[in-house]
Image (cartoon, rainbow, N blue to C red; front, side, top):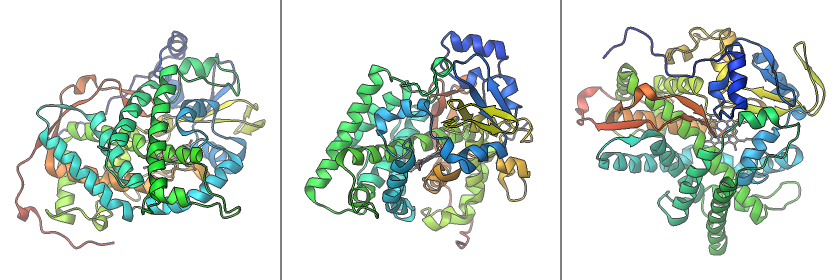
Length: 468
Ligand code: HEM
């Protein structure tokens, strides 16, 4: 099936400003469906009707002022901290100032470990396990759940050298699924009604789920500490990490904080991105055909090795384009600690400053055909200067995502592997719609059939030599 029209993946229709506010105050929970049309066109704008000033900053030059040039004046907001603190304590994703700098110093070796070549075999093992599950499925599966299981499995194997099926790992996974369903990145009513530096109290159920996750992670850490075993994985690196300035290690609670950050940041976002990528693939078989052709040319029929991943440029651009259209972190929120001026806009201390990859990636003035799926727009030289500055799925500046290469490598491996093995059919495609939960997720589960293809002949294409 070759389509003549470009594919426009589903997105909520922009509202009028009045409609957006009425819905927010009536308790609508999905912030994506509340965005007014003007938010996709402005460079910087103030949201009316809120208790504290809220600014949407879209222009790439102004975004760089917030996230890079004046980063110390714009720490993570109370909304982001409120949503994540019950899970990650004062862990690296939300900590600030000297606490963050110390954590980063200590955790850098673990990130070095994340540096991917070491983790690649764990990724391959998790993909093999996922294929076994998909082969055994008798009918359609909820795509987002499958992607969460796969990326959680990768992250568990990388942190603890064990798969998701273990007793404690599996309990963490299930509690997390409930947590992510109940915690939005932004609760519109709370955002509009909270004063500056509000203490945001999470719902009781959320706190209970976080307690379960932290308790089980604690058991896994204790087991490792008691065994005295030194394994080459993230848990091992974080346990032995020492502050180069004081020589001190993390306390037990801090260990749980940091491992929880790895678990949260390391799987939820990738699962969101892959869910959207596979949904798009199910609607554009021509994209699947190109991924297969590229994989056959670069890899042949054998295993996809670490060195091959770099040669899969088209597949990587499919992933990049899925991240543009459905950035998992659709809102990066900061709080202004000092009065400032951005462009010509005065920003009072205490204002909420929102940098939204969702809005910026679909901005009418930065992108050609912003709502169209077009992986080739990421080819070198194709993007306008402003579009390339307006692409920030992993954030920017000192707090940029520490796992961007990890996420890209696992995703390219997963896309290429599953495209070789399956055709994809979405049964409820017409009802698919994104909503802003903890990450950008489908409003209702995407029901997907993974149809096993007949193994294709080894002669499909001669394997090309791997070029670095
Ligand atoms: C497609 C997948 C991913 C996306 C879209 C993504 C996105 C982001 C974004 C936007 C931020 C910055 C948030 C802010 O400035 O407020 C961030 C931070 C972070 N990410 Fe990711 N991420 C992904 C995968 C991963 C993975 C696989 C890891 C691995 C462990 C990871 C670890 C982290 C950590 C530790 C931070 C905090 C860094 C700091 O504050 O110093 N992420 N991520």
